[in-house]
Image (cartoon, rainbow, N blue to C red):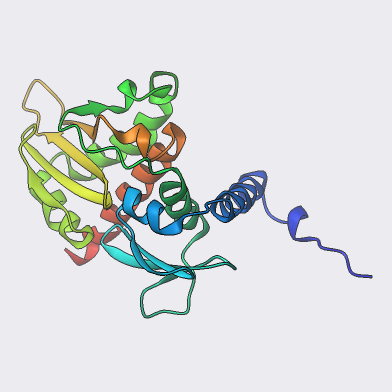
Length: 216
């Protein structure tokens, strides 16, 4: 008789991620029409056992039914948080068309309560690393498929997923005002990811941008 100790390993945060992933896999298994869900999410349907989702400018293959999430041309699975976001996006996508109206995190349902933590984990490091040199943000965002947008002093829009653009905005500041920033989303975002996941996604984006500074 063997005992599975995997559920006892890791920190509470890691265990939380493992549980989220397990639940997301169960949710995926309940989808009866994968092809229709591909239409709603913008994913590519390669057949009943394989779909491709673009995530932060890279194609990921979801292999079914055993749920493996692999970067294209790779046998290595992505980080757990990325896999959770990919599955949540795919399973929850409602196919809502873009509304063309941008909102802040505070305007997403439930976002107001979580905003102080969101701001500390995403907007603060964005401003700290790029506020004094906003053009650098454009350069490093290009690696994630970012394109210049027309907000603030400098802004860039990154398609985190095919139907989920994230716009990072910076104001340079001057002698009186410190640099400032914000993160904007299409008003349809709740049709694709829950509010908590939006925060996790933005954290990952900022982390990747900061990591790219050294090679810019």
